[in-house]
Length: 429
Image (cartoon, rainbow, N blue to C red; front, side, top):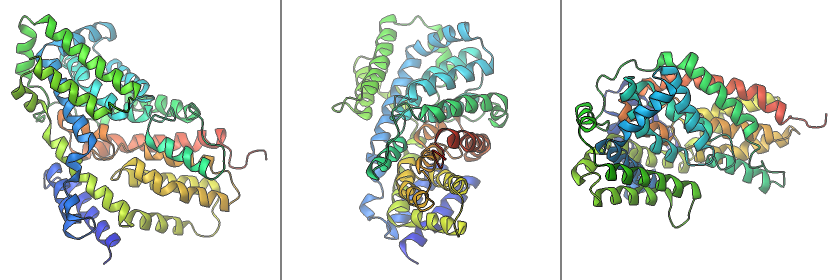
């Protein structure tokens, strides 16, 4: 077998163990990375390259900042105030969490948004006595949906705009994505409130160590807090968010998060020991392990092989709507296990070529591809926000499948209805 076939075999084994959880998720990811290295699909020296990825540092830094919010009692105070304003019902908290996450992630990093809001959400849940497992996954989903609203919301949007520009066509404008992104976000939130929540875990039994220990949180709440440390922690979080929003080249997301975490340790807002305890290492190794596998899927040609097979199944001269739906499904399938950036980069030129061959405008097809690439709701490794809430929420692989599958279906229906109306296949006819 060639590298592509070997990669598909490895991916099949990973998917099997993810679903069955016969092996812990993080261990499955690490073994997958080792496998693609030992099989020669990627250089052996890159097997653990994921540990040096910027997202790993970003996650670690934000976990520490989140832990500091609990140890100073700031998260509990914020939780009480939010509950007093929004009420303690599950629906009101879910709607506000998803809405805020979507709004922020439309112009900020989806990952950074989730990382910043997660400790606040956990504090609110503890104050409202609502299982955090009912809120963290919707939070991640909200961040993913919000990324579809603007050009800078998520990398796939930029990739498709650049693909159009390179082909000599009018690229998507900055707010043009809002035509599909806003309806998608509104419908997505409504779906989670009405139906999706039924598939979320119903209790907090067996949570991972990344969640702040309940007894410690209660103890922190009962103590007389150092107000100066609370203010320092809150200001640090706001500064980190501001730096992320400004997109300063000298201070990328991971550097801002790391500096914030180090600052809080040095100012004794959180001890070094508690900082280490606050990091969810399952999340770190799961993310780091899947990155080399995603690289193998891209470089070996396995992703392209899947694409060619699906496109070949369409045969003859399919209609543009068929092409759009098929490429949407393909992008959704790929993005559950590889980065949305890689999935879009792989499919954008294919969609462009097919649309041109049909004499149709490629805008609708490319929009469907980039939106689908952001619908990585069905696995904990499809997108960093999903991975980020995995440990603190104590989720299992199948929890994502159950809650995320319906959201994907709803997203596709919204795209099938809205996209052709805004970007006609045959404009002017």
